[in-house]
Length: 404
Image (cartoon, rainbow, N blue to C red):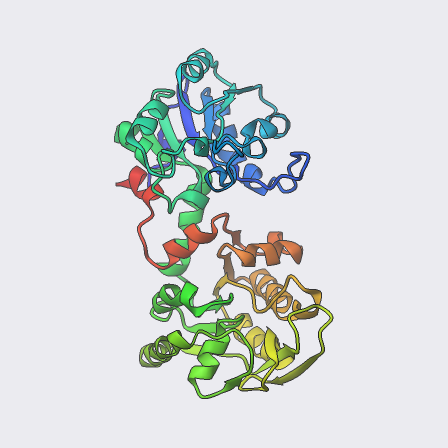
């Protein structure tokens, strides 16, 4: 795969698609700059090598949160709010374009000097962005000599700035950024050349969200630990009682098919032994621990129980390669965070012992960050949906547009 190391960037203008979709408070202050920090290696590498860097990104979903007059140039989604912080973290001069395309933007790009950064306005302020619009992509391509995609979090979107624009650069004038490359490399390390045994820990609310992932994983890994709300569909499909726990009855047959496929392939699936249940979906609800298949009516499972934490931990500690995608319970509530944090601590411990660990996006990332253990695992993905689709074996448009 071609990366920025393969490009001659000195004296060139480089259009870099980054993922600066950072959370802002009501005063437009950045509350978590992780995504900006992750893009710095690519940005700094290009600057040091004599390039002038043009950054394109989206922020939020302005098309779904329009102004009262129906326009999508929503103030709270303007990238101008990121300029000051970007200057601080890059120690470079930042220029800002009030649009991502157009005559004024082209003039600013033309005047950009090596070592300077031009931050474009939100690409999603154009309806054509999410439609992969050809004209918008052509206008973006006019801004630069080279194109780099470093926005793994949007690589599964065939948008104008993430995929279509790459078609207007020759193959030797486009490449993957360092973050994008490390995301792919980390996922491939698990999918294509893992050290065994390989353990996948899969959680989250719904089986329907993870069916394709599970179908892929049972053919690749040695063990799968299933927690979170999705576990109750499997438990009920085995004849257990799950009370009011989240359960997708329409997916019970599929759950059984996955269990059968895993057995045929020699992959061991571990379901919860016990669960922490509650009589209400609330932090102060009455709770008790019961066997996973014996949840009474009017009670619902909101976390894995202590025996399950112990069982999953034993499996994880034997691993040489670990994938974690999805929490074990409603970890946002303190009463029900023990399972998720128990897994986080064990994954960190196994990593310290030499295992390779990939935290595969979404709520797992939030959990590992909240536990303060992000630096104690091998790789934390920046792409929730993108990582999930890549692990499922799908071709991501943002990657294909670069690699062919």
